[in-house]
Length: 120
Image (cartoon, rainbow, N blue to C red):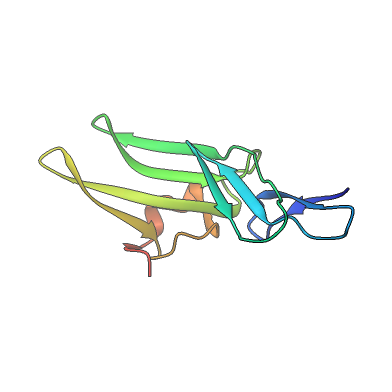
């Protein structure tokens, strides 16, 4: 079996495995707070099982900004996914993404300077 390790364009570690008959394994698992398995109906499986780094800014005991990135990423690197939670009467009412996208392309240090809109 061959194993290839690298990172995605957003800096997330990835491992690809090929079976002895050269078929690519295509199952992926990403661990954030819980594991999410993506299983394609092919003969094989590749696994990503690294937890994400998470930073949270609180206000009044409530999380306002939540950022996720690969472990070891600096807060100033443009490899974060950032969401903002808004509240009405103390209850969360909306989750919006920095600049309207849930991609790993933002800087945690700049979280207050982005426009927050639903993912498009």
